[in-house]
Image 1 (tube, rainbow, N blue to C red):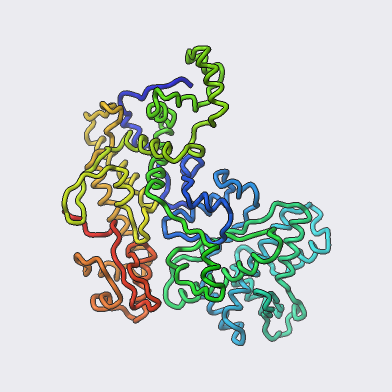
Image 2 (image 1 turned 30 degrees about the vertical axis):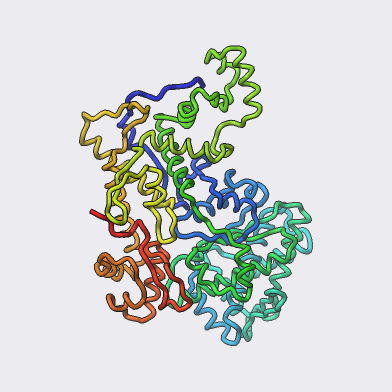
Length: 560
């Protein structure tokens, strides 16, 4: 289409219709190709050299998992090369602990964790083979063995994996598998059940699935695992930690076998991963298989801009094309857009310019964030933001001295949480809060109009909206922290009442200020505050009582 000018007066009635998306990446309806930011972490992720994906709360793990699960084109080549098989069952760590005590008193505790993971993987692969076979399945001897295995485990999605394992063992089935070539047999004395003589060799089932995938030239399988690292405390935390350690050992075992017909990607919280004991695997080896999800300041700004753009484009207020045309006017970058012949003629492009355009278009791909270089992305992101946000703000630094800060530095610094990152989740919540304040203000002041200013920008979101939205979002985040785990609500409020202007905390300070029922609760509470991003680990120590924490910038006391 021909170049269009921006509308002179902003349609304030459309503010209430702007949709920026959900703070929960797992159910974000605005998570699309156009809003997805391919960070440096994502580019590394797509190289598929790592199987353990580690990130703090709100960093985008759930969004990444959802996109993989949905086969999104933004995660090509993974979603084209692999068929995705998700495992996202909320495991009851209490049930896992009780099952181990009930069934396997004579066996090593870790064996039950290995068993659950090996059985889960074997069952998902077997289901995959059955679902991707012809109607005459089972046809071959290997398919018959897989079918018998599926009948034996009696997979019922109303039952948890722990219930399935427990039922199999109690029925007298002997389950055999290996971990790094060490054979393990899981069974109990039979009580006269009909399955007394049945034996299951999980590694053989997995190997047969792998062979069928290769022989039938079915796309290889990528098993993605999530929702095993939600916050728990006390004895359940110890079970969770060992359960995840077992998964990583199973993953290591799998990587050395099966001719790469299937692989795993495991999504874990940063704070939990750092506390795993992986000596048996070797930290160097494990770290080489880990991708840590990080957001740079520039990537946060791009994320913020992408959400603004999608919402405003949906309402027909302005488009990315208009932003680019204005930003690079006179620099021939309008030729980035692939106009059809009739569009060029309609725009009255001269014959000479027409042929120049054709040559350029063959060399330059259609303009979008996928092919633009870093500097161009940054310029466009900033232009989108300043189209409706002020360029500069006033703020008070740590010494309470008033300073000028541009909106981009504000976004990069003022949302840093306990992981020293500006979480996309918090930045998105802030954007929605700013817009909500704008809606109220313009509804209460119907005489106010917003028109293009001398910079060709809309002074839509006032500075006072931003200050108030920031304060509101911090208050909202604190409310969320208080309500996330009911067990800690009372103690979190006591923590806030006692902190005063203090910014450094440890076990001894907490014990002097707040009284818990159990001594272990002091450690669990501090771990919870770190998990939620309210506290930042300043000094680590193998003894939790000697760890020192500080407040990140978003939760520090602000100068009045």
